[in-house]
Image (cartoon, rainbow over the protein chains, first blue to last red):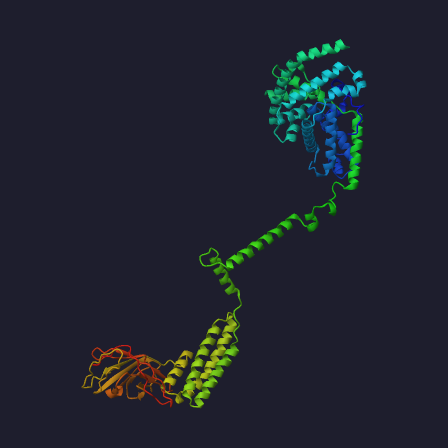
Length: 235
Length: 380
């Protein structure tokens, strides 16, 4: 990846404030100037402008999905990047005909890329980026409250670990519904299930998630308190 | 409202930023809290630098790929797999059909070879028999040259006529036998002609030959001995020009006779016939004309007691029977002759004896036919 890491600094709390609100509204509404079907058709014909439109529209979707699965900004960007290269390579083969079917196809690619990422991690363990980030990018660490950064990363870590304990279906429903913001009807179409089944899955998934996070939170409360004290004492 | 639906509604409110904390029940509160923890991901956006960089690289890659091999373009011939190079653009369905035909041919040829060698008892033997029957029916019937057949018959008739003209009875009878054999062969071949029209035409040619031969054969009767005349009569009867045939003869004592015959036993020896008085000979058959004569041992007797188309009776001296076997026949006025296959002496329990024509003498004169007794004759 030929990327500079200088601009990557995003922390959890800062994201919420600096997120592009329009893009964060994940109800899929395409600009009326060009229908999604036309854009997809042109993109299949290697139209760069149409491909650029699709990229801009679905970059947040893919990125959020990758980030929520991995919990690390840099690795999420890597996966996002690989996902979009795969999309460009295979867009001529997709049978998608509308936004939802295209999203389902793109998220399927993203899911495969995440799985490949985890396989690579098993065979080739890397140093956790959270600790490297401060060394590589001290400016950003100085710009932000290190305590906030640590807290945010711990929060991500807890959520991601809790998400990993869910079943694949429960995780998909939670991510599509609560992270990507689709309605339960859209999720039902994306996963080829009935909306009622999606609501039941969602209820069980959030119950499990809450339980797992509560367990993780109580276990880390003591350690978290100690870490805060250490940081402030060092300052 | 079910908790699942209530949770779904609350999530919708949370996503739109209109969630009312007071409306959340205790049961759903931890669930909503867990969902709220995911907000950090929902609001996450990649940095603008990353977005621009990735977009630039994607479009560059896209243009590069489009220049090298457009997404929708078929791969070039050099990059195709060998099978595609060999078969070109032949559709898969066509290739599959060809493969199926080839496999079917292979199986058919293999089964055919096995069937041709199938021995009785083998499961394929029945198939072999069926195949042979089909082949026999499918093969074209041998062509029948009717003209050649008729020409052969005419040649046989000419040979016969020549032998008659030369008064060579033996040669005439040989030619007559050949004529009869060839005629039967021709009739068989003509019967195999499958085409009805051609068959009728051939049969008409054969009938025309028979009609013209009828005159020659009848004209030759006067020059033949009794045996030859009987053979000619047989041939004419086969062709339908006469119906003369003798089925049996019956020898009985004349009621007016004062002496009675005595019994003679012996199955393989000549029967002994009494010579005292007169006897009556009844001959049965068909085709007798009103001037027919009875032949006894080659001698014609015309002093008939009664005659009809099916029966003729004569009274003869017992001495006419002579010693030994008796040959009885009928001679019509047109010269046709037929002999009885057997005669029967029936006086006081007499039995029959087979009568066959005797060989003809070389001079062609009437001779007494030989008689092969097949049964005992008992004389009165």
